[in-house]
Image (cartoon, rainbow, N blue to C red; front, top):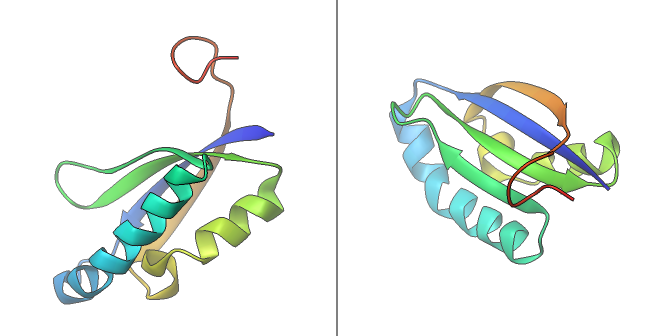
Length: 93
């Protein structure tokens, strides 16, 4: 398993964001409960968010991200993915 940090930029369409917010939150809660999403949250200004995901590889990560309503409904307009190696803190092995 590997860690990935995902940085999302959201659309400026506030109605689209609001319509997808509930399903997005429910989806992420499931992923957190399954131990796949380890950290998730929006930027304070609401322009995007960050996820820390533990996945087998990029293919598994892509499948997980594609299943998120924010991705499926077009809220996410830009996604950057960075392999991440925790060396200190709660995620460090």
